Length: 372
Image (cartoon, rainbow, N blue to C red; front, side, top):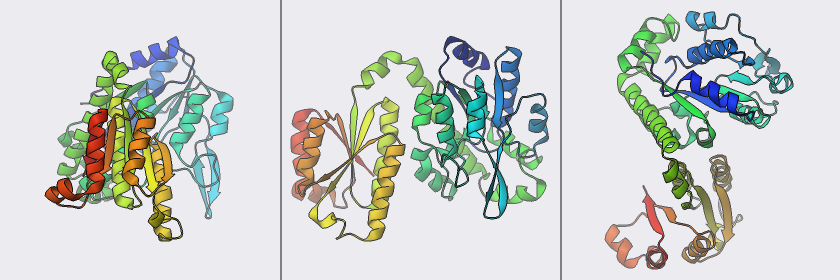
């Protein structure tokens, strides 16, 4: 049985109230839960209410029930692009902008576009449509949320290469969780309603293992529950906006990624602004650190920007004092750092960096979060 957190009627009311682009996201724990099916159902409902809706991009995966729903729906033709000797189809962004429907249906939100198109990612196409005043209904699986990518790799053992920034959930007007029980999803898989028969055994041994699906479902339910909690508690949200997070990173690639992603989750939870700070000492000047570290550092700045952070790079040998100065200048309320690789007793009694931070932030009412 499919469950949803919001009805199509509410989204229809949002469209009627405002002409700016609205965003509705159908979220699922995995492929096959019915996200595309529900989008197409809603497209039919919108048409019945005289809403100008167009299919900008849909992926049916040759599922009979889903393909049947595309009948009688207006479709904007895709763009054909040749890449490495193959003809591929992509969303035709310019065609959608020129046609300018009230609502565009855009599937596969985390998709990476073929090189040579205007935007690298489909979620960037969606932003362009919203900026143009076109409302968008789209779909994505929980494993593609950028701040969860490390957790998803731990759950599934697979590195997720296609991700979307958490800010898309922040700006969304509606998020609908398409939820099935684990047994229902596996039954759909075995019945051939998700993949072709020859692919089912492999799927059962990988992403569709029962223990993996349980964890994915929990993440999807938690994400939508947090979103709804923020939408409902507007008074709490307005107070939370005074929060300001500062994430302090070094050139250590994996630790920096972890700090960025976890701070992003915290900032999104409180709907707060956040900053990523890198203090470059003399030992970390570009001519003194390896090229791979420089590349990782640039990638981490890019990741932070995509997740909605302000990135600051400051040259100074006194890291602790620089952090304190930035915290004062930016009115930081919560400081996020990585866990030092020291025994706690030695850390508390002999680490000058931590001692200096603890001594000064206590007097300023700043919270310190040590992320592991």
